Length: 386
Image (tube, rainbow, N blue to C red; front, side, top):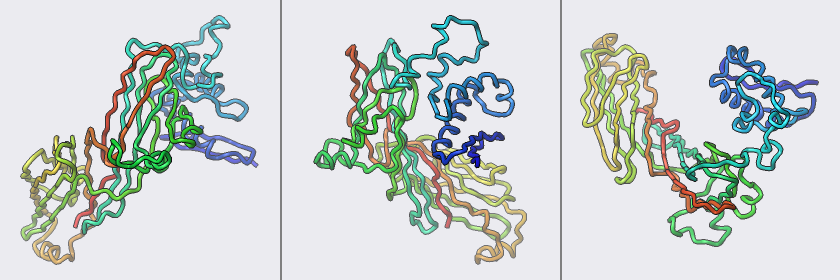
């Protein structure tokens, strides 16, 4: 019989059909990468863009799949011979696919030249955190990615060294090296350019990078981390149909680091009115469409503590109901969703991962400049209200 494997994107379904006991993960990966390829070509992938570009879609399907086997899905390579311009008569030599398609390094074309040889490396970590009302950390997870932007000429060979615990143990090095501590990475996923056999053998990340921007690797860490930005909320319903909030926030990272564009979202009842705010720093805005108050702090230095008070009228609550609310009865507390926090801390990684070296070797022997940057941001970061 036939098996139908599909993925959904907006209002579209991309479906693959197989008559054999095929590798379903391979088909799903192909469909997801095909979706990304169409988005790269058409910016938005919807019913209209498929109608407008069905000729190019036929060409892309023909090139990305041969006899049921996925081929190159790299848009930079495919763009060299499948363009969004009208088809023109061309010489046979020009209409041949680029060498990169049949090359061992299918993700990089030959003969790339840049006036200035540079490579930019960003280590981006997102912290997923859930804190209970009593302050206990219920869930903590770090999702990291090493993103690269390559502007290197020729066919360079790169070697990346991290403070990887497994590599340190394999080579018999002390964990207290130059970097201080080592990190045990889990669920590592590499870009196809990385030589996996070499990594499994001696934990060396060796690769020939694609030109331009790409994700070299992603990883995950299940580790208990102290919440970087702590938020406490005290909610007081008063007699006379009003409710007061006292919000205290504290940064729990080193004073030399700074969290930028901090947004603390505090949920409020849906029928509040007459908002008034008083804060020691930043701006406070009431968003009635989202039933929350957003406290924005542009720069939150480490080791600091700030206070904010909010006052609302509650016209739908009578004096008796307010009294009942104070006793924990009568007043509906279903709006007490967790407090959400957004932030970004540059030059800082919560896991302690470090780039020890990035070596660039190319036959012509040019000097290249590697630039490394660290960023920690919020993922799904929530603190439950008491």
